Image (cartoon, rainbow over all chains, first blue to last red; front, side, top):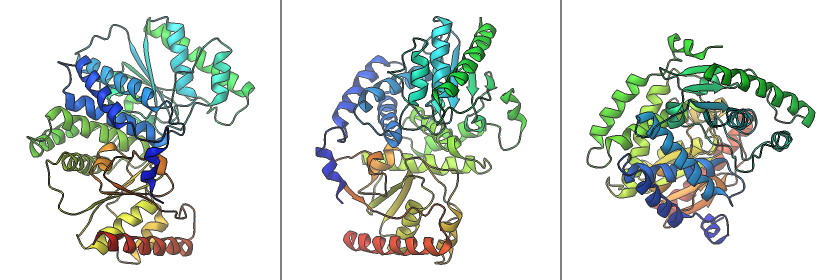
Length: 214
Length: 214
């Protein structure tokens, strides 16, 4: 089979020109902080990183913009080139499809802007767990914009607190950060009722964490 | 649990100083081609990329050296800054633990230096499939130095031929390359006899491919 024919199929062709234009725009935004070379590498490697495990390709370019911008922002924070006025919390689980996503959205909501949040997975899957999306919607929390992302060095470097969930060894240990490991049931394959119990467990842990960050 | 205590545990502590020294050395090697910033990003992201899915941490630093050096070499080839005198072939499967590793080692051996080979996985696992290592040893081929690696943009850019094995959508389609998809049985969980059949299938496909590259 000649895969190059895929270039003519909508949604599967590689948006190279688009990504290079995006890299140029981002390079302007990060001028004086990162070289154009670094920014282009971030954009193309972020695309490849998401493409590896994605199934639906329709949102890949817009997810790449968000992922690359967030990674470059994290690295600029870690270098001290961009201010980081609130504590940075990173949640890491295996798939970045359930636990770490719930923790991130709950922390964002409950902290009311007093904390900035990122999440990632050691072995990200194609899409969020639908049961997780459903039980978060019950709390009025919208996860439509979220997607699984591989764990990268930049977001670890930017974090003040790293919370791992069953994949502690997948995360580099840098000095000067607080590392926590939460033992949470994996919601993969569980019923809505079971996922609600996990959601409430995550919520009370997030509340405890936020109390220590106040 | 406070994970920061892991810093004192041999093999689990993060070799940050070592990796930064390595980045300095590599930056000298790639001086005039890449900035020190790019090289440091490559070293630290390569480490994080391998750490995500590795189990045994003992070889992680030396694997990081090889992975980062290979990725930077690939990118320099793609930019035309380092000569690429022989065809570059990239094999991509899901786990980079069996099929793509067999294909890479067989191509390297059978081509006798007339082709340069890389391999990667869309969702790499912790280690090579032991049955694959065993059946390759039967042909006198040593896989002791090989390890699963995530697919990155740089190695795709450097390739003249990209051969995917059951994960064609995980790989960006660049112009000017030849793309092939081989339908091979996944050796995961199979017996030695069954893996031998796959090995021989891979071998004859590699021979066909090499004939077209001659």
